[in-house]
Length: 408
Image (cartoon, rainbow, N blue to C red; front, side, top):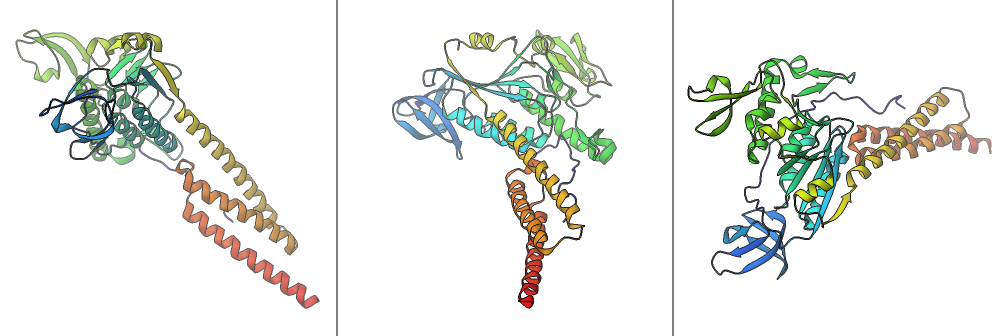
């Protein structure tokens, strides 16, 4: 049996995957047929292809509408007087939490709340998981998603956490929080953070960073926020100044400044990643407002009387993974003990007992590997080891039975 069944992996924390936004997203709950004038009140629960959506209406229940044929108006008539609150806290490093977030968002959308509120305090993490979280935020079938950078252990939204905040329709920040410093890094086999260029070389690193810059900018601009400021959070060579021209406020690269444009402020100089305080984020338009409590946000969004449901799906998933990891560690210790026992001269009945117990443990390991990818177990290798244990057990048993029969 192997002395170790789990390996360490180095991976890119910020790996850009393709982003697909639903062009038909509507922020409305009153639907009016363009030809007949029929009016329905409700909320979309799911978007499907060809501009069609599944809508839960007060008048006709759950129906399918072609959004090309219906105009929409932003109001709360068709929604339930409730708010669903989810919390994203800590590093974004686990598949189980990412999947739990997607399920929680889907469930929240089907409840038809006034909006979904995300309480966020994260230092960032893996971008493939961040991408999935952002996709779940974008695919809420018209239900607004509000970000609340609440602060705490990590002080706000940093690195990949910036993407999650920018994906939301509206952003509130606690006065003592920050947002920014979103450059891509990797984790070495020793668990140390390393620059992409040090791991993959300058050319590959620039490809990653270029894609990541564009991604954050697209998230910002999608919700009418300064895309260049988002890029400056990724690239320390991006300079940003704020200028006014004909009473228009713009954030530009200094190289693109026109003679008639007055410089109001330098937001980022070459050589540093942009990180904004909460007040700065509001001032430049990255965030909408300051808020130091959930109740303050509810009042501001005219949801003071709404029923608030706190969804703990993500936290429950983290607890489940912790239990699975504890079970894994117990099994690994037991396997190591059995390896030591097998090195000693012991009678066949005891050997068979050890192999039977090992067979049960490896069966459990296979199940854990398939259910919890975060444990980084190789299910195929474990199944091969299980087959080897079974073969050894049958061999020892056959020899023992043959010896017993010859003695008889």
